Image: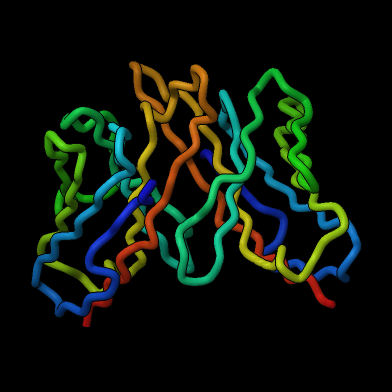
Amino acid sequence: KAGVTQTPRYLIKTRGQQVTLSCSPISGHRSVSWYQQTPGQGLQFLFEYFSETQRNKGNFPGRFSGRQFSNSRSEMNVSTLELGDSALYLCASSQSLAGALIANTGELFFGEGSRLTVL
Amino acid sequence: SQKIEQNSEALNIQEGKTATLTCNYTNYSPAYLQWYRQDPGRGPVFLLLIRENEKEKRKERLKVTFDTTLKQSLFHITASQPADSATYLCALFSYSGAGSYQLTFGKGTKLSVIP
């Protein structure tokens, strides 16, 4: 079956602009998590959505937001972009919430990421 | 403060040897720990999960140990091959109270297997 699809793969923005990234999870997966990856900080958790509800949130400012649609597709938005927002943004899907290991490994299936450069 | 440390940013090893990667943590009470592999320009790929009450897990040439007393997980690749060259990430899942939880990743160790 098709994997996690993220669009766009690459984008360049300038400071102050906003950006919207999209993630289509694996069919049947209801949980979508977003991560920011930078060389200095590694993978940092942004938020997790399950059945259109935000279930968990990391320590990022309110400029970072997301949503999930009824078909489990998710978008994340970053407003008023700053230079430090340049990063690889990864989306991951799973069958259930991260903590629910019943009959599964809690495996996250990651997309290829959206590489954001802020100038 | 909570911290996850992977032993080194980079590890070079000769082909055929066993690679051992370390993941240490402080101020976590993990319910489980996962290991992922990440190739350049790609998203991480899940390898193994080990629960808090398990000491060891194996999958083909991979072995993971989990010592909650030492607060450490070791990840071994036996008979390493150049194709094993990648960055390996550990991730800890823990409950943070009031029904909340977190899955926290280490910064990774870049493994290079030299032919």
